Image 1 (cartoon, helix red, strand yellow):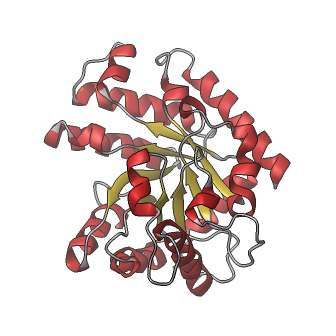
Image 2: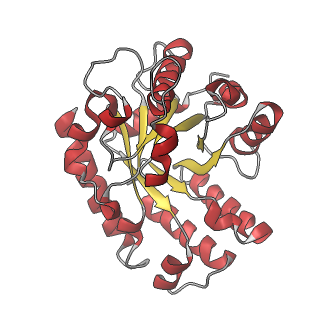
Length: 288
């Protein structure tokens, strides 16, 4: 049976002018604003409501797993139900798990999140490769076998990350730039004919990427690099500036928004997602 790659599925979303990644972040203050209890049932209700509102409007949803995990087994059961709803709605899911380890340990993380028909199956997961890009091998095999994807942390918007991500390797590149180069390299080797690769990176929209040594101006051939970009909306980055922020590296942009669309509760959620999805699509179209 032919497996459709994650990159191809992303390309289909982009062709339909869907570039919004809707966050699912059931943290305590937001649950309170929604009038929900700060427990697994509240997290489940919020998550399933966001999935229903995002289906057909956003390219994907991104549950922040920590906000479910804090409730233990009940939280994971709630997350499983949210994921089941997303699968039924044929809505792509990126699990924001930021897993990173070596050898069999990382392979087990990849097995948990990227294996078909498992309780926590998603389409892609966020990963940390600070122990070496090669430690992600356990995910790479599942990308090709099951049509899954990963997003590698490269240049994140939290200030604490700069000390690590701006560090220089022996070859002179920053750690952030090396993560981007390694992701591009994998896509070129493994999916040379694809329009969009299955390995992406996380790049904060609030950052000056040139400071991290990331080249956004040189045209690149080969598969487009998926860029998962937090920082739009509540954190201050303007989607209208996406072309300036990401340049040529942002051809496959997923603009992540959480608080900006979730504030205000369930009432009006569909309208807020629709408005932001249309604004993001318009901004991306202007710079493509």
